[in-house]
Length: 156
Image (cartoon, rainbow, N blue to C red):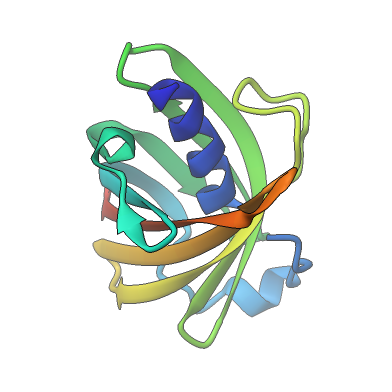
């Protein structure tokens, strides 16, 4: 269950359908290039209480490559060292980074996910992003799950 939750949450955290910017809009960005995902952490809250069994902490889990044209690729591994890869679109606006999984045939998920990350650190060598996602369980609208994530990246 923890691995399934990890992939669902990672998919949510990597990706929100918001559109794409043109090549020139990403020219001044610090993101183009390949980044090591040095830390990925997350907590799940059920009705406001942290569920310790669903906590996620992964280090050195893979890479993300951002291209100036607003496209990108990721290559990650889970806690069992199973490798996953896929593509995404991205753009920045203010202190937000928007990412949208665009190829549903990737190995991570068959659904399209997208998200708006809050960018906490944005330098040419370091990135720190956070995001919160709230879900309501289908068939049980009285239970809400909130997930809070942080991703730390270092430029290769």
